[in-house]
Image 1 (tube, rainbow over the protein chains, first blue to last red):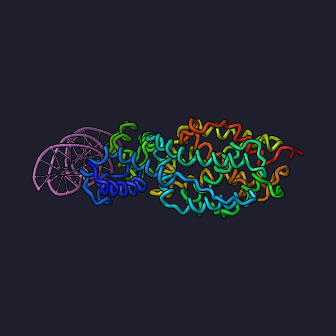
Image 2 (tube, each protein chain N blue to C red; image 1 turned 45 degrees about the horizontal axis):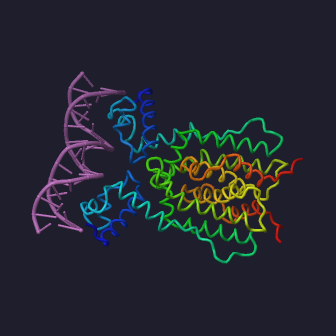
Image 3 (cartoon, each protein chain N blue to C red; image 1 turned 90 degrees about the vertical axis):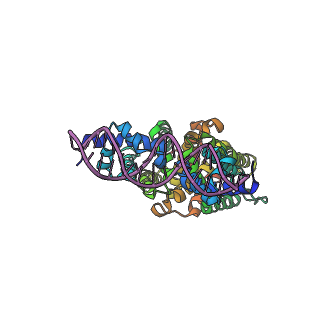
Length: 196
Length: 196
DNA sequence: GTCTATATGTCGATAGAC
DNA sequence: GTCTATCGACATATAGAC
């Protein structure tokens, strides 16, 4: 009842269509054309448009956006370490066109399909905040009163910057170098001159 | 060629429909029904669905979301002042259902309709950052090295918190009191014990 | 100016041939 | 299993009566 090759083709075509058009704007006709299969084949592999949409969301959340990568080798200096981490994060997520499209779809459809935001939070936001909270708690060179809240400030400042600059085309209207944001952010979390 | 009353009714109906359904999901039939007019009337007042959409966006950006309110009476203590301002901002924007819907639509449609994000940045984000930057620069009790970047951190942390908690239903999966976020944020920007 | 009625196209989904 | 061909519903947009 299911051919693995065709299934893969359908998912590939559906990902492009849903990410670029949203759920309501996407059409099964275009998905079929992108995938190189007929519409009937799609309906034999998935339970309609919404079932396909759900499959795409889970695939993206679990396969592409699950990992919040932290370098194995942590620099001894927390300031340098967090600075590199932040710049790497901003650069990577800003350049990742598919990630940007996923964020757009995520927020745009989160009212109609709450499981999207749930999936994304559990796969991406939750682990990132968890790791940051632990790092801010356990590193002896870092002193913060409420690591969980500070982790939110840190992560929020980075994500919001990427969101405004890249998703909302803020680069042109509100130009600001990544380095300036990150440097100020690090200075706030770990004031300079706190080296061991 | 245009009746002011009908125009108002159409805009009212269109706002509800576009905010709840997005551009692709909205139908002119429902807008006409909501407005209590016929479809033909809509097409005589506006240039099709997209023209109506554009009118809605401009109306919302200019009439509802333009003002970033700052209390006239600024407390002498910057920590207290920014704390009240932040909590007021979070409370107001979190409760404002129409603002949440607008953010969703804004981000969801920003690729297909770039003027939406441009309008929102100019009406809302730009003034807020401007005011914050000025405040952080000119208040003698506040010392920050790069006010423009710190304003981004401040605003970004608040907006991202509201976005995750309210738009993405993070309240349930990642519970965190507003006070804890705001208190930590203020402590980072203006360390306690910096009173005059 | 605003309506009813309709033109014209595309949507999601399926039946039936192979 | 996968296709072609097609269904009914509904989309945007307009013509013509009043």
